[in-house]
Amino acid sequence: MSLTLVVTRDVQQRYRGFLGSVMLEIAPGVYLSPRMSRRVRENVWDVVSGWHGQLGQGSLTLIWRAKDQPGQIGLLQ
Image (cartoon, rainbow, N blue to C red):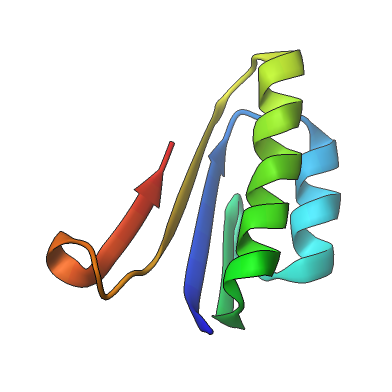
């Protein structure tokens, strides 16, 4: 389990409801989970990136600790 951060910008309200149900909203559009498993992280990303593919508004960024990546940071946009 690792620290996971999601940043949203100019997205529909559904993202806030969904992300707020699985993560803590620490600032508007910024969601944090101190201990999220890989499986949950991938499921969350599948949901929000699927919505983004359909709705096409705003931007999403997912950041997590990844020991096998340069700087030990994983990033999806």
